[in-house]
Structures are given as C-alpha cells and as structure tokens.
Length: 400
Ligand SMILES: Nc1ncnc2c1ncn2[C@@H]1O[C@H](COP(=O)(O)OP(=O)(O)O)[C@@H](O)[C@H]1O
Ligand SMILES: [Mg+2]
Image (cartoon, rainbow, N blue to C red):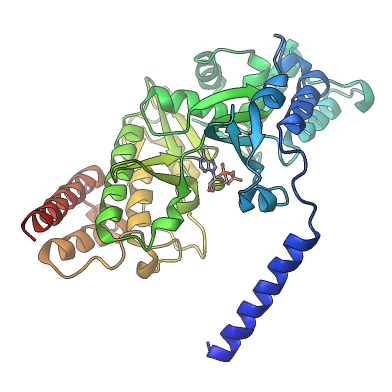
C-alpha cells in the first residue's frame, strides 16, 4: 500500500471516529437502572416461569455503575456483543452481559407458541410437560441452528442428565441451552477448574461476571517471554478441558484471541481466562449410542477463510476428540487463515529449542491423522520447551 493511500485511509478512519463520538448519544444512565428494567421485563413478561422465585432486579440499580470512561462501552451499545464494562459497588471491575441481545428468547417463544397453535398475545413460555418436551426436541434437533449442541444427537437421556446437574428451574435451563448456555457452562467449567470468569449475579437474562482483563489480541506483540507464559497457561487450561467432567466432555468451537482474556497481576504475573464459552459441543462420552469401535477421533485441519472448521459428526460419534488441542496448537502457530506471522507464538527466534517449538506446532496443526503424534503428548513436549526457554530467560536475567 502506498504511503499516500495509508494516509488517506487513516484520515478517513479518524473522521469516522469523530462523527461517531460527536453524534452518538453519550452514556447518560451510568447506573445499572437499565439492567434493572431489562431484568423486570425478562422475569415478569418474557419468561416468568423461568424465574419462579422472587429475584432482586434492583441489584443492578443498587450495585452496578457503568464505566463511563471506557470507550468500548459506547461502541458495545451499538454492536452485537451485549457486553458492558462496569463497577460493582464502586470498586470491583465487572462485565455485564446481556444473554438475550439478539432477541433469541422472544424468537423461541414465538416458534413454540406457533407449534402449539397458541395466540401470540397470550402465549407464555410454559413449564408444562408439552412445552418442555417440545423445547427438548428443539435442542436435540441436529438440523436446528443455534444454541449448544448435545451429543450423541437426539439422545434425550443425555440432555436430561446434563441439565439435572445444575440447580434452577428446568424451563430456564432448557431455554438457556437453546439460546445462551454461558451461565450453565460457567458453573460446570469452574467446577472443573477450567479458567472462566466468576459468575457474580444473574438477573433475568443478564449476568454480571468478573472482569478478566484485555483480549489476547492485545498481547500478540508482547515480548516473547510474556507470550510464552500466556501460552503455557492456555495449554494448562486445555488439559483440564480434555479431562472432562464425570460423563461429559466439552469441545469449545470458538477458541480465538477475542474469546480469551489476559490480566496482568501485581508482580508481573499473568492470568488467562476463557471469557466466551457459548459455542460448545457437549458430549456424553458414556452413552451407549456411541459406536464401541469409534474410540479416538484425530482432527485434520480444514481450510476455511477466516473461520475455524470442524465436522460436528466426528465429535458426536467418538468417545474422545483432540479438537480442543488442535485449536490451541493452531492459535499458537497461525491465525485461522493459516498465516504464521499472526500466530500467537510468532517470531519465535532461531535457537534450537525455538526451532523445535515451531516444528512441533507445525506437526500438531498440519499432520495427517494417520501420521499424527498424540496431540496431548505434543502439547506436553511444547510445554517442556516453554519451561526450558523460560528458565533460560530467568538465567540470563540473573547473570546479566
Ligand atoms: N469477563 C470478561 N472480562 C474481560 N473482557 C470480557 C469478558 N467477557 C467478555 N469480554 C470482552 O467482550 C468481548 C465480547 O464478549 P463475548 O462474551 O465474547 O461476546 P460474543 O458472544 O458477542 O462474542 C470479548 O471478545 C472480550 O473482549
Ligand atoms: Mg466472543
């Protein structure tokens, strides 16, 4: 790109930002009142039977203050994310997430009401047997779009068994499974000691969770030493996910820089957290519907411009898949378009250990299933190299 073109592009971008900040209404209601209104609507109108117990919607108005200094709040109000950065009791940084940003609950209600031939004006999401069965069918329908995926497909017992593990009304749990499974996953993943934000409060379809720092994307140009520690923590997290929880295994299908947050702690330590666990395939690995001969699935990289591709059928028919481990290797090695300069561990260096690290990552991403080494072991070797490199950095610092 010529420098003239770059100059004009920057100028145009600057102008756009000026217009955005000049004419978009500024955040006026900086307290959490709008979340209280939203919560009242969710619990009284949208789905009263999802919330049969009295719920303190005033929590938002009384404890939440929107962080007016955060420019992301202004932009987030007008994008699809439904994320607001705020302070809890004036001290603790939190994130408020609207789980129903796209009106998915209303859509679900409309579809179910139509199915039951109930007039729209007096149709409610009900917890009667008929409604619950219809809802379960929708969650299990492998052709249906949206929501979490339960495997093996069309296995009602798996779904019932999965939701039974959580407290709360069944209707709410089923609605969440079909629209935004985040609160359920936060509970189960925290139990597995997989690093997710802490769920602080749920009021209707709005949740408050701990703020976990900047997106991983901000750290792509950080010193290699810091990136090594972040990579190490991402690998540790993936080990936990691989172990699963009782009979269930979880495949996160949207492991990408935006969905991982990194917080710098006092003393130079870092903490890695997976902040978006909405896209998940939940597998009952004990189900007798899984073919006994289909033990382990080895994922093969699928070319896909700007996306992460996988075959759902593979995950749903095997007891194990190494998809999560593949996804981490890919994140460290390259971006989703296969560009290695944009992998998280880019610019590794030319030391023999660093070359070795690159080779292991390349194998992990590009091997053909029949020739792939076990990806769990590959990640263990990658981690060993990370430790060696970290030790080297430590020594150099010591003897400098
Ligand atoms: N707990 C959190 N702490 C810090 N940042 C977060 C947190 N949750 C979300 N974010 C930021 O908000 C963005 C959007 O949130 P996310 O849950 O990923 O929504 P979406 O489903 O729309 O992608 C994330 O990419 C991340 O940068
Ligand atoms: Mg996201």
